[in-house]
Amino acid sequence: MATRSPAPSLRPPDTASTHRGLAAAHARLAARDDAIIRTQITIAQIAAPTGEEHERGGWVARRFRDCGLADIHTDAAGNVIGRRTGAQDAPAVVICAHLDTVFPRETNLSVRRDGERLVGPGINDNGRGLAVMLALASEIDGARLRPRRPVEFVATTGEEGAGDLRGAKFYFADRGRDAHAMVALDGAGDERIIHRALGSRRFRVSYAGPGGHSWAAFGVPNAVHAAAGAAARLAALPLPANPRTTLSVGRIGGGLSVNSIPDAAWLEIDLRSTSAAQLDETERAIQTIARVAAEEENAKRALGTRALTFQVESIGSRPCGETSMDHSLVRAAVDATRLVGRQPDLALASTDANVPISQGIPAIAIGAGGRGGDAHTHGEWFDNIHGTVGVARALTILMAVAELA
Image (cartoon, rainbow, N blue to C red; front, side, top):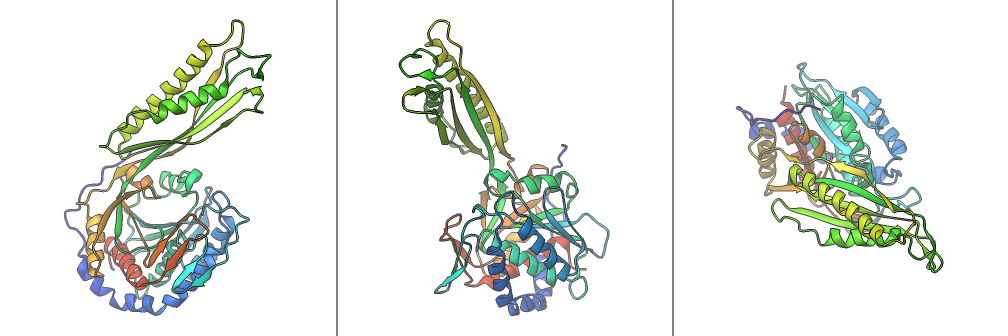
């Protein structure tokens, strides 16, 4: 797919003027703070494992209708989309929040209070992002607050883990390919501005051989030995500090019993880097190591025994890239952060914003206010301390880019 290179805007948005013009909207959102929290709790208690987001997506679609959004629909990837028309027919600004969580369907999703904290799986990631996106969809009503550009609200699927950014990839490959800009709301916070996309590639290396009895068939190639040899070589692979690159073998398995020569074994690899070229180079090294491990095990096999085979399968790919610090979107986010009394923290992470960034669409990911922690655990928590500050910041960023009509 062809990509475009985002250039710094010659006339960056006047974020301070936009922020002042939104004073009444900020006050209305602050007055609805308790309602936003109730929405956040409701969302967190609707199961949405990656790949099974339909129930939570249906609930969000109903809320989109309550907000009066247009063209509400669920696409083939399960993304829930609603649109607020602008004063002009122009490429839309997209605001995303992901639907899915890492928790299996049978997880107890009850949310409890622990002092000032709300505690429960998914209460922060991404119950907070979805709740604030809905609050913004309600506030930007097209009447008392109308953007010049259309704003598209997208609740995405498959952001977590093995979801591999499925929803964002589908949306930006088609409907969102000409978007003006994108802002992702992901969890809590009011300082971080993620403008650099951390790329990742994930692989499953499989070995297959004849197997057999540990005594009677000794001499046939051992699939687990090959997998272990590959894992040892991968652990010793030199990786650059700049661009920072990491590699880990996250899972390994195989074999039938302690007294059998395994006929199959596998390992799964997580590779991350800020550089696409480095990802390419290290992927080639993974292919070579997988082959060498098979060849070394086969070289030891008894005469006449069947050789071990191997396969390297891609099980995930997240693109990398960067929206320049000089781009008007990032500058608006920096200004908005300072305008709410916070110090901007320009950061690197893997979010839905990876996809548009890799396609040359200006994109950032930000928190949606408050504080949170212990994500992806049963003790995940959210504290609404100064939560209204993050909501105000998100509205200012969005409207600075979409422009007040």
